[in-house]
Image 1 (cartoon, one colour):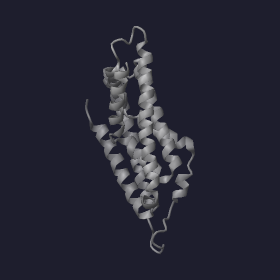
Image 2 (spheres, one colour):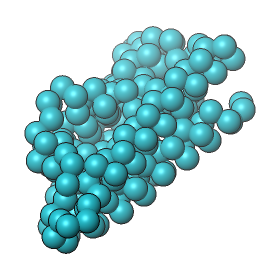
Image 3 (cartoon, helix red, strand yellow):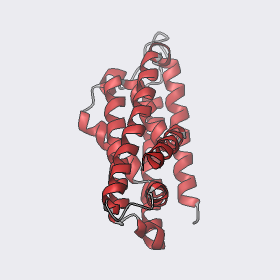
Image 4 (cartoon, one colour):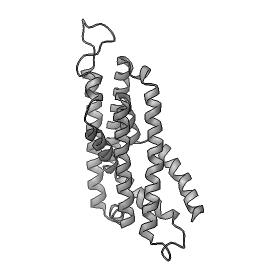
Length: 220
């Protein structure tokens, strides 16, 4: 069992390092404030845990077996990513410097307003980003069972072991994203400058819209 857990840990670390929509959303939140980034990461991991619990209960298998369920969640996920992307692009317009305003002084909604948004909103953003991705559900139901030893099912219930893997996967994923939040916080002095911030918002918006479009267009 320890051998399987060690193998699972290595695989989960590699999965966490792979960039995706969650990385973009958490990074952008981290540039507003460390609190926003941390809460968004926590929300994302709640989504990971829910997918893991669903896999342990066999619910994620519906996404594999049902084309309708998968496509429905895929379209919802695509809409969510596009909405987040459009919001990022709108933030670029709001922070644009109008003529007559000294360089370096942003207009529109200041960073402080976004940084002070409610904690629940940040958590919700992370949860929605993760749960709206059907690939996460399919991945959970196909990834976790690979690391179940043959002995499980006799002394230890299968569902209990899958739940253990799901919790450990969540912990590993959270550790990585908290590292991302910390690194973004350390670079905020540079990345938080109005001109740089606008470019990052623009880039993240384009990436999210692109990911949403790709998710909407893909076929199984």
